[in-house]
Length: 167
Image (tube, rainbow, N blue to C red; front, side, top):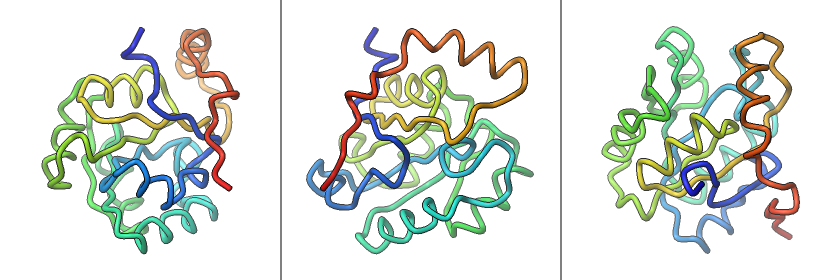
């Protein structure tokens, strides 16, 4: 079940500290949007996401967004964050991930992808050959398709005992 197993597990993006990234030799991050940086379909990032992003940028880590959403959703969000993006990323297929790797300009071994879904973000990162960082969703989605997807991934979710907590 390697393709469903994240390399690292965090409570949320704020737990992914610049010190951790440096220690793991991560130079680039591929970010998901919905329920990773903000709630589903919210046009603004959470306060802690903005603070985290600022600290990661300050540490010299390059970031790019890869989302399965359409450009109309991703572009305004990416502009707020000042980040490049790939929309219609087709996760878990590797199209979006590979395009992000190309744009970041680092070896795959120097890149990690961050997201909240096992069947798209984690599987996509693992299939693309980059490290995967699972973050627990900001809030539960209410639509039936998302509730079904979450129910199917429940047996594959990492234990909260695996959460990395930096001091």
